[in-house]
Length: 450
Image 1 (cartoon, rainbow, N blue to C red):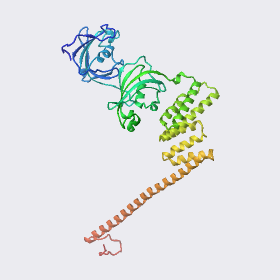
Image 2 (image 1 turned 45 degrees about the vertical axis):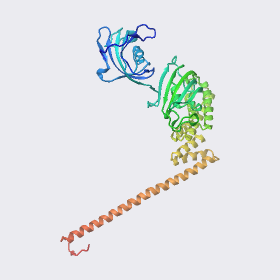
Image 3 (image 1 turned 90 degrees about the vertical axis):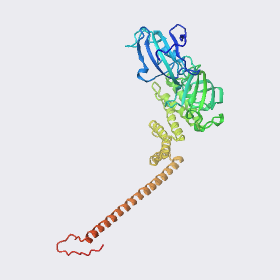
Image 4 (image 1 turned 30 degrees about the horizontal axis):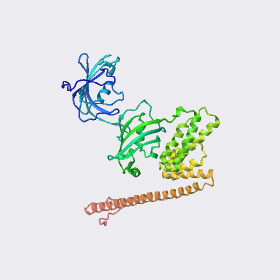
C-alpha cells in the first residue's frame, strides 16, 4: 500500500467540513455499493504519525486483517467516517486531526496526545450484522437509514412499521402494520423479523435477510405465498413505537394488575391453541410477581394466587407443547407454593407418564385421589399407570428372562464343550501309548474306550 500513486484530490469527510478527516483514494475500488453502518468490515492498515512520518502500527506486519463493526464506536471517528466511504478493494489515505483520532489522551506509548495521524487502509470485504442469538447467520441486518435517539422497542411495545417482504425476488408482503412486539405471529410477522425490531431505533430503515429457521420454517406460509423452507428478504422501516412498561417502572400493585392481564391473554391464546404465545404471557406473570415486598397480607395473597396460576398454566401449556420436563418443573414449583394442589399433582403426573416414568406418575395421581376422591380423570390416569407398569414389567421379564436363558445355554454349551475336550485329550493320550496315572493298588485298563 505504501508509496502508491495518489489518484484523486483530498476530500473532506467530516459532517461540518472542518478538515478533520481528509481522504485520498490511492486505488479505486469495485462496484457502486460500500459498507453500511452496522456492517462487519475487514481491512488492512498502516498507521503513521503525521508529524515525523514514522510508522506506529501495521496490520500487515502481523499478516492478520483487522475486523470491526462500522459506526459503533469500536474504532476512532476518522475510521468510521473513512471506511464508510470506501468500496471493495479500495485503498485510501486518511489524514486525521487529533479530535477525530485519539484527541488529548493519545494511545500510549506509540501515539502521543493531540497527534495528527495518517492511515493507509485497504478494504477487503464486509457483511451485515448477525442478530441471531447463536450467530449462525440466520438473521442479517444492514442499515439503510440510521434511526434516531437510543431507545429501542421492548417486549410488548406497540410498533408501527412499514415492511416489504420478498421470496426469490418476488414481493409477497407490502404493508403498514401495527402490532405488540412478541405477538408478531398473529400478524404473519416471522420470529427473525421480530427479533430484529428489538434492535431498531425510531425512523430506522434496514434490510433483513432471514434463513428459513427464523422465517416460516419447513412449513412455509401458504396463505401469504411463502413456500416451505424459504429464505426471505425484508426491507423494514420502524416508523414509531410505544414502549411497554418495564417491571422496574411499576409498583407491586401495578405488577399484580399487569400479571392478571397477562394471565387472561395467555388463556385466550391457549384456547386458540396458540401455545407458544400463551407461554410468553404466562412467563411474564413469573417475572412480575417474583417478589412481594411491601404488600399488605391481602395483596400478598392475591399476588401468590396469580403466581400459582402462572405456574399451573405453564405446566399445562408445556404438556401441550410436548415439553414434559418443563411441565414437570412448573408443576413442582406450584406444589412448593401449595402442597395440596390437585391440579399440580395431576399435571406433574401427566408429565411423568408422558416421560415413561409411570411409577412416579402413579404416586402423583394417587395423591390426587386422596385429596379428591371424585376426581374421575385422576382415577382413569391411575389405571393407565397400572397398565403401563404391568406392561413395563412384562417387557423387562421377557428381556431379562431371555437373557438368563441365553446365558444358561451358553454355560451349558461351555460345560459340554469342556467335557468333550477332556475326553478327546484322554483318548489322544492313551491312544499314543501313554498310561493313566496309577492309583495305589488299582489295575490300569489300557483299553479305555473313546
